[in-house]
Length: 176
Image (cartoon, rainbow, N blue to C red; front, side, top):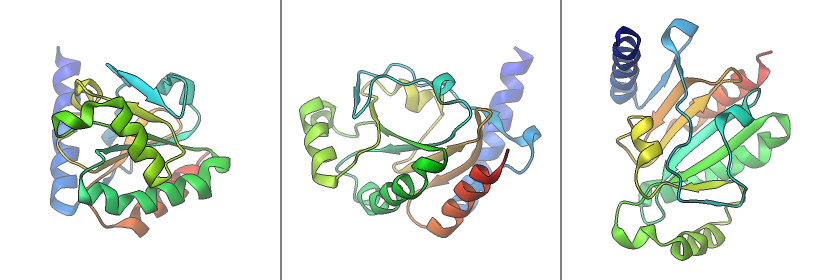
């Protein structure tokens, strides 16, 4: 119980820091949290089902998005670019599509959007908000960077700070 409370307190501190600046980088292991596993995923698109355990040793960018959110649409060129630039250097981008509206729950609609936007990285369809809830997420779009040891070390909510996010990706990829 104490460990859970400490984890929740640390998450609240990170979320508060991120909310005030739009982004937060946890510089030390003491301020980074183990990344929650993908859970309750209805369907995986562009990939077989993945787990963070399988991705251990890679830097993982988790992008919570939904296909009708204009802010999400504005971030997609950056997320797609990072995937292209860094996937061969150890970055794994995972889109977690969490619907805002009932029609966004349709797998066919999500598939159409993925094709329209040219998304090639794996997309987890989180219709029941299970992964969303595991991350205590509240925003579209929301980016969570996970280091090679499986810890959330950077978050960004909303648009902007693209250079900062890319710098965080590069720094994490450079770590041994």
